[in-house]
Length: 446
Image (cartoon, rainbow, N blue to C red; front, side, top):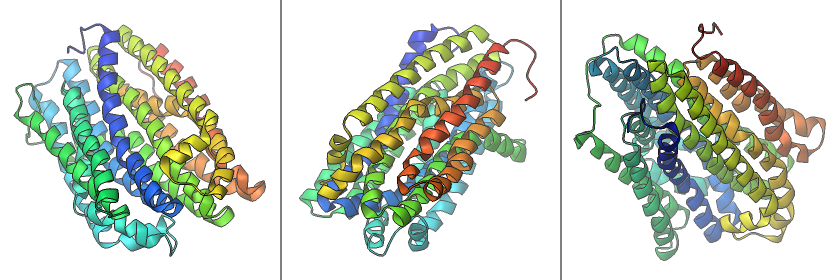
């Protein structure tokens, strides 16, 4: 695949197919875990996995920080045609070093400080033992989850998106069958779900590692000449994507606490389902951004402005399709979704429809807002990407999570994300139009 010469439409959709398979299958880990645990242990198991959810967001976010930040710079340099491969690979080497540091730090936190961490994320006395059982096997493979995110980003930018997808598929497929085998056949319950997830992550890592033994691999370890500057560039470029995931973990923690304060355990079990559905929707948005980013970054370096606009058009078609599909599905069949994830009680079935319908209106604009961060990053506009990530991931959403139930009624909590996405979308459309019109003209100063 030639990112500078192949027709944009088939190129984009080929990348989208690979990125969609990779992103969607990665969400299978949490989705299948919750479905199996919810069927085995009921609403308490679902609520316990809602407590664990921020752990995944944090681990993935640091992998994306190094992977997306480094691969955008890697691909833009390659597209410019003005550098040797060794110059591009300085960013790969630096990103890999950052990933090692991040993995070591989070390995220590999760291995030795799991109880205070889970308490912080909203675990009650009843839910803490279940959450600990799930996390126990995860402790042994924490680095794999982080490295998988970093490697997938570089494989896509090194012309091998299919292998990234194959790796995630291999791990995800094992996780599906492993969950059933360990949870039900071996009667391990929630611990078995964690074990299947841990093994699946290891499988994904080793499959993607085979890229470095293929002839098409151009990634090399080289000695970076300006390590501190490159670290700064990677962090600035990748921060918005990083913050999307880490903020989801923060928001889950805030929601968990507010739900337990105002609504109770039934509300938390329903929110656990929403977290998983929202993760799938976000993965759809990630796939669009991950498909568009290598094409846009390479063509930005080559100053192929028309190809960038064409890529944006097809990406927005995909955004609209995913937005409509997930909004209609969640509004039409809320209790059907509940039954997929747990064996519900009557009280859960009573409260679930209004909760799911209120919250999931946000899916109309969520894919657009998340895709915009990839688009702004690919255009080397990290400031705009950062505004979107911080506003929707913490500032506006966090304020609404606390303000709405206090000022109105407990049920108003569920409208925090729809209002957030609407406010952020106004900024996104404004900046997207401005930057796209400016392509090929004098560079913007903001």
